[in-house]
Amino acid sequence: MFSVYAFILCLIGFFALAFAKTRHWKLLFARKLTERKKHALWATGSGSLIIALLFLKTEWGWALGLCFYAGLLSLSMFAVVFSLSYLENRKPKRLRA
Image 1 (tube, rainbow, N blue to C red):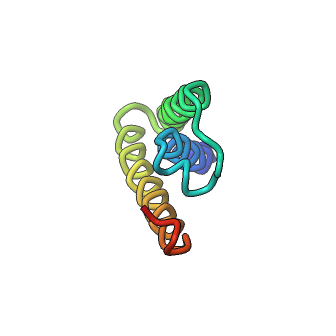
Image 2 (image 1 turned 45 degrees about the horizontal axis):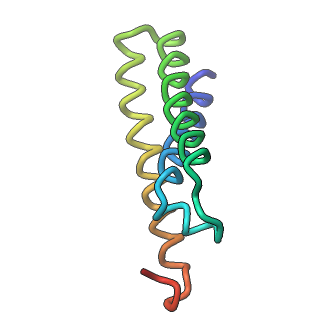
């Protein structure tokens, strides 16, 4: 069961790290990304990735836990990349950079 939680935490982590960048932040929000929000998103993303690793280590041990962690990182990273690409293509042409 921790594997499902770890996958969700990996998704949250990568989305938070992606939205800590100004370019990705502008895809969803019209407001400016402040330094405080940027640091909060960075801390949230990093923290959730570390907690996901600890969940997998608890469930599978270090050897298999790290292997599952690498796989979950890859899956969640692809989900974030494809969703950001989709958001970029859904943007009106006049707003594209």
